[in-house]
Image (cartoon, rainbow, N blue to C red):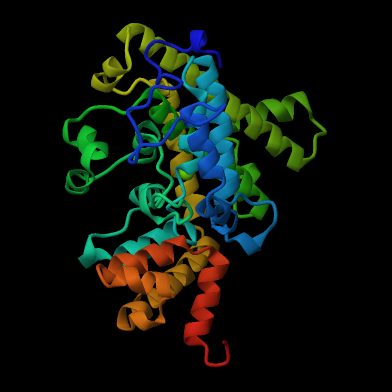
Length: 375
Ligand code: MG
């Protein structure tokens, strides 16, 4: 996007509040394109391919993984950012990095690790994503982490407790002062929930855990489903579901774009600083927000709490907590790099190691540590 097309309240293409360590400007790229590129080249990004979104990676080749989820979030966020005249490169960088701190086995992995870490400050995937880009990536000569711009880092840190905010320095200040992040950060956050609500319907149907017949009464998705059935009476089930999902995503994207445009117009911000002191402006309309939550409720009830998903979640908990206990009982079992880190903070070093694992790596580690015939 050319500079002239950018809204006055967007994050400027090249004016960052800075990186943690000063660096010379990049050749031929904006600062946020550089951030995006660093994220794509990171090890943590490649590992997203083998981390669960809802279904464990080996359960099927067509289910979303954390990687494809992040790409879908980036696609949705980019197209809305273009229409709202926001900084597309920044939105893309935030979207691609937002789940870098996720543990293996999706939310059940995070809950299990959080439980193991309860006495040591807890574990939160959002905070961990920031830890990955600030400290844990291990590839640049001059610094740990990716040394991203302030604006990318603040976008990654969607939420944060006041206690944690106090320890985070400048990046935590907005939580203490109750100020907002940029519109780009707000948008990446909304695109995340828009994306997973819809692709989880898709994956739920594909897995056979959700029943299409049962879903015609749902808001938005059900309405589109009925319209597609009416327009194409002989369409097969798979294509009908995909068409209804496509239309549902589109309805939410259009609503989010229009509502945000209206709220921006009404608030009439002139600068990025105005955005920081205003209420959140990237929002669904009230009616659509309600429908969005209805879909979320349905997914919780029928997919995330489905007994087959629960079985996986339970197994994930045993793996994550089993690994944590084994390493905590004997740090000598950790790889050398984490043993060094463990000298200053053992539980955090273990959490960093476990959080970085892919699903299959965690299972392999578990087998090696607990099964007598695995080496
Ligand atoms: Mg996400």
